[in-house]
Amino acid sequence: IPSKEGKIFIKALFDYDPKEDKAIPCKEAGLSFRKGDILQIMSQDDATWWQAKHEGDTNPRAGLIPSKHFQERRLALRRPEIVVQPLKLSNRKSSGFRRSFRLSRKDKKTNKSMYECKKSEQYDTADVPTYEEVTPYRRQTHDKYRLVVLVGPVGVGLNELKRKLLMSDTQHYGVTVPHTTRARRSQESDGVEYIFISKHLFETDVQNNKFIEYGEYKNNYYGTSIDSVRSVLAKNKVCLLDVQPHTVKHLRTLEFKPYVIFIKPPSIERLRETRKNAKIISSRDDQGTAKPFTEEDFQEMIKSAQIMESQYGHLFDKIIINDDLTVAFNELKTTFDKLETDAHWVPVSWLH
Ligand code: 5GP
Image (cartoon, rainbow, N blue to C red; front, side, top):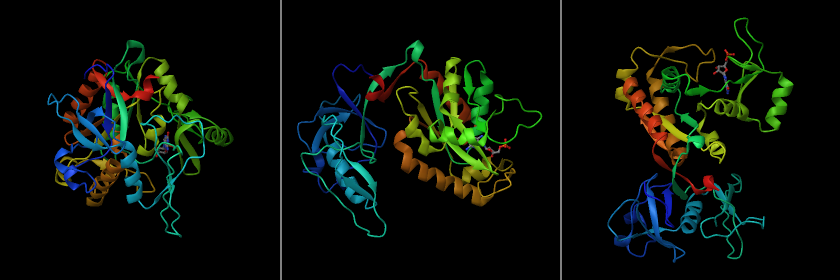
């Protein structure tokens, strides 16, 4: 990873093939890229077509890519469930990069796709993933990658990987202690298995946005608080957290600077071979008991992984396929070791 030195780098949040792009003035001049690629911007002089090259590419010739503004507009137009509205707030910065749209769901009944764009107006950041400006960043000792978020479908082996990592170095890794409103069982201690709190307090905490996520199970609330992440970090440990992918965007803050790893299932054939003797607590099972995997579990896992990747793939820093557990674990371990030594691409907003 190079030093920044006045260069502009962006992470592509979508796949782009100029050959498929009807709008590009010249297909041969286009630059193709994949979601997650790092591009260096060579020119932003044109409002619609930027010039860019792949980061590290020694070929000095740049190619055309759609500008952020242009791509956001047409993506929003293509997705009829999204409404593009001018932003009412006035105190927005209007740097070329930040100019984008506020999007909201379309009213299903009217089935109308509204698109408004007045030149003079400024727009809120879009929900439409296009590009993210990034910068190379090497962690300082006081500011390591401390929160590592693991996401993946039910049954992919995320908990097993997390447990193995934790056991490999309990001084170095930590996990959060969840809150619950259920009664403490005799063998449990407050603050170890759970932090036991009243329903009233839980509800107040939810109101005050104290939770990263929470859910209800058998008439009790369970949830992971933001403070529980902070308390792991305060012990100078790397906090391992597994959450639903939709919560990731709330964790991507200056404070946490998370590194997000997606644990992906292998092919269905490999799932059948590798999970022959394994058990799963299926999301379809109300009892929450572990049973041998069924063909339906495999299919559900693969489908759920596909949805996660297409909806949240732009938030993943790393994808690890859990085919063979030992191989996946070693890859995970190597990833963690590199996090502490190598520079990584992070959003520029994390450095201000
Ligand atoms: P138990 O009461 O048997 O300890 O746990 C019951 C259920 O609560 C389990 O299915 C467990 O996965 C879920 N649970 C435990 N901690 C959390 C949490 O932090 N958030 C959510 N949403 N569920 C949790």
